[in-house]
Amino acid sequence: MIAYYKVIYRSLLMPKGSTRISFITPAGKRKRLGHIAEAFGKNLSAVINEALDQYIELHEWQLTHIQKGVKAARSGDFAAEAEVKAFFDKYGQPS
Image (cartoon, rainbow, N blue to C red; front, side):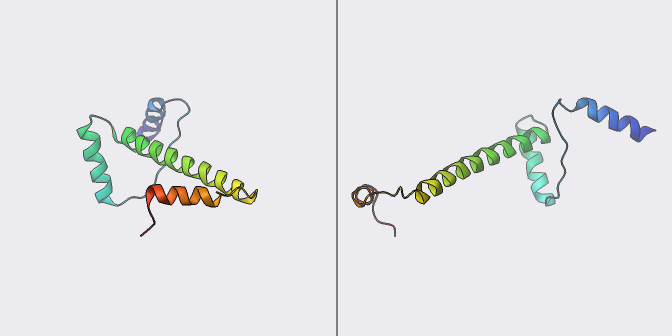
């Protein structure tokens, strides 16, 4: 009976449209996240959600630009030789 109430109580605390996930992480990483959460006065879920937001934003941006580049390459849209030369004149040659 106690477990039943615990589940209901927890589900009432979850914001609408939220879902619960679980995963395995090294204990040291969990401890570090806990320290960060405590230092910023946040709960662990908030810190993990911020990290996930940053991860998703970065990788969606990368995927969008990679897909755009692949589409351009498939259509034959490459930089002209003068554009490549101007780029390397400005930024230097790779080492």
